[in-house]
Amino acid sequence: MKIVEILARYFLVFWYFICSYDGWAYLIFDMHPFGAPGGVFLPALMETTYFWILLKVVQTFIVISLALNYKPALGFLLSLPITVVLCMLYFFELPHFTPMAILLIISSGLLLRQYAKNYRPLLEK
Image 1: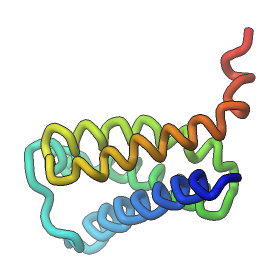
Image 2: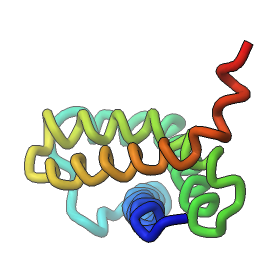
Image 3: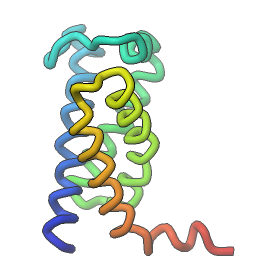
């Protein structure tokens, strides 16, 4: 594994850890460690408690999977739809997070290329 791919992987671990920490702190302690969310989409999403819990469970699995190298291809595959939604949120509703969205796209592209051989059996006839 190249150093760039390792950095991309641990950047995703770091970012998803921050996201899951913030979400669990809101769910369990009703606090926002990194400030109250702005905009319309994120507060509405947080009010749908059942979905918010599911999202935080998946993000926690992603962090454990990528950090501990336990089925990292599965953890990364689960992160792709969340990354797409995060990038859209950052581009359209929280423009000051645009650099993070760009880093998420670059990291995901590098890891997609790295784990492509693991996904080939899913696409074969």
